[in-house]
Length: 552
View 1 (tube, rainbow, N blue to C red):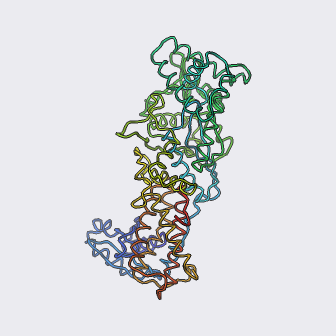
View 2 (view 1 turned 90 degrees about the vertical axis):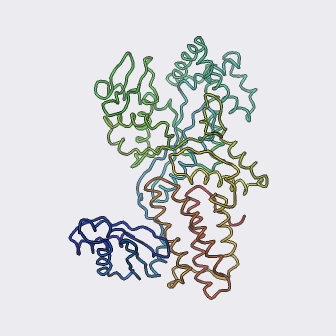
């Protein structure tokens, strides 16, 4: 496509002595393989009709890979390629645009001492797919997450746990069954948060506990009763994270706890007081108003680093550990203003790291009726219940292969939406074998593979040189795969893959309904096209983190 764009651009330069960016788009198949509106862009400045300009361009283009050129509508130029070039495009793999680059993908970011919920399923699925796209482009991708093992949410949970245990009695934790630990800690957080907001004495106790938790890390205290409760419950959280990622098929390389980066961030912020940050009523703040943003506190009055300071420590720590070329951070869009202030502050004294960081904000997963989930209020859907609810939506799903179908349904249901908007997940709709769903595409792959298994011999598409009209429409859609993946990678938007795969499956279904494959004179060519179709389905679903089954 780039070669064709340069050809048209060169002709325009020769005819009209003007440089213009030429963009090719995909028209409906009956109009050709590519189209451009360059004549409409030029007509006004040349004081000519668009069709006249288009005719001049068409008459001057000579290219061995173009089978036909025509002027259409008000002045569009439609381009049809020779068959063998279209076949080459159908076989083309996406470019390795990130080859040799080290990329850090940070996503999911669950907090210890709080429950994993449906929002974590969403952000993990999104982050996984983005990481897959970058890896497919040749990058050396490292998948990490970051969570708050210190802070007020920990203090609130610890307060409630101490109440339940009747004091600092770590031995009583043995009474909590493994299957109950996540729910037990989640409800403790809700309890602690409620009492914090309602009772001044409890609020003061929780504030003191917050300092004690920070001190545990400063003193490396592992043996006191309070410390043993803290470290045991933190490990319960990490065990729950491991189980969650294993079930989703995610391989997280490293967990970064806030406690590991808090002192780094605190030190960096203090070094920049009077330069980037300023003291205000005992706290250290960044005044964002001068940049059209808002003021945020980076170190509170008690000298404790806030989320903002810890994020600075995290960025520096991650770069030290990985020396990355790009850091992609997938986070909820409710944090966009927070991230904007943080980014602007970092730009002032760590401009290189700021330039290497790219934020991908996503929407929220909401309950029925559009209610936002909140672990503080307790109105959440636990993460694993998303999977279980989807299984219950189809009672026939009951073995390992069926769970792969369920995971495909969930992932696709999230990823088919453009990242940024909110999601209301429908478990019944997601497992449908008809319509735009993961199981529909999994079945499409299995169905095509079943047909191919019945064939005596399937040759490579590279041996095909001539296509009939229906085969050509099929090949046209196949040829869009590489550019679709490249676009999804550049924009970090997996929904482009979903849209393309669904459209591709529909094109194949129409082709198969109208054209005999096995036993036809065109069998060899059609089997080659089908084989490439299954390859693309498998690769595309893989980028979404979805298994393409051989049978269903």
